[in-house]
Image (tube, rainbow, N blue to C red; front, side):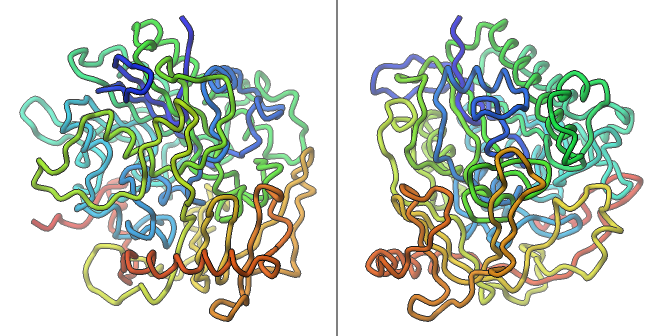
Length: 534
């Protein structure tokens, strides 16, 4: 049976005609965490990813699939179908103990699919809010959830700052919510656990319903940890410098092997003929460390291509055209609109209002290689949109504390954003424009991460507000590495793009200031600490 994949992991049950959208498919979405653009075999990496390579080549590689430059914002956009400037995640990641998350008026992807008859299961990393129980995944549309609420944890301890954050959440036969914290799984490597749980959910699924499986691996996010025997098995070909690279490579290879097991289970269950599978990373690898985004500029936290153009593919026998690289413009918000149409959702039938979507239905684009959009907002940030409030939603002001002391076991992959930065970054057709202030990251050489170039003469894109001042424009069709600022040569293009800014600003969500709380660390575990408002 021929295997076909879809970039974030989607499994479908549907009859499909040449121009017909699949109806009520099974959907399997697979996310990697902080994975480099170049760190797959089909891009020439020496990291072993035979399963990803196979399924990507048999399906459609999505070359211009954009995400956000950090974990929480990408997940919020995937779950809501909306840009970060609408969800409030324009500010960046949720840091542990912060009292905000995806607002409860958002109809999330699993919630939308569930009301259309899907069985919905979430596995792995949530990172979209946990300060109240109502913000946790099994209260946001997932029938079951197995994984972590926060953004990272020890791969074997399952702890963040000494407290466990690995749990199984569900509603029992009487409808009572159960949060079963898995203290007994200490020592078990989390990537294996997530794969095994995905296999189990496929094998024990309710066969009367289409399946939505969200498999959100934490690999290869920090901490830099992999079993020694697996490092020998997977990474002996990786140079020993930089020293983190071998374990990083092993983290990816273990995930890749898990994806192969999931696909084999789908085959054994006779599901592949009616399945769409999508795989994507949530952002690029952390710049200049263990991962490689070559040949792109920058990495995680950066709005340069290496931070926001994710390694992605889609595979399904329902695709009309396969075995090629699709260069159409796509964004992580698009999957919501695409799956909504497949599910046959009629949002007007429900009392909860449908908030405006930014994503578009991209099925014809990925299936028949038809263009679907010419514009993607990378992000918009404006500190005038932060307001004082005593309410719990969107609390962004961090207490001053030593991150290394509190969260040192995770290294330097997570830290607050620079509050001094306001910016507007957008891609329109082949043009990409930066306006405002934003930290610059440069390039990693192909064969040596230790030779990453840092241009200290230009730490920020300066200015903002003046005519041409503080503006950079790149022509990605000629300059995919974003090396040459051509703003002065194309003032008409700059003017046209900047005219779009007021339209985005009027739809931007205000967020509130508030300090963090540490009340969520109780009884050796992370638990919600704010009472739900009814």
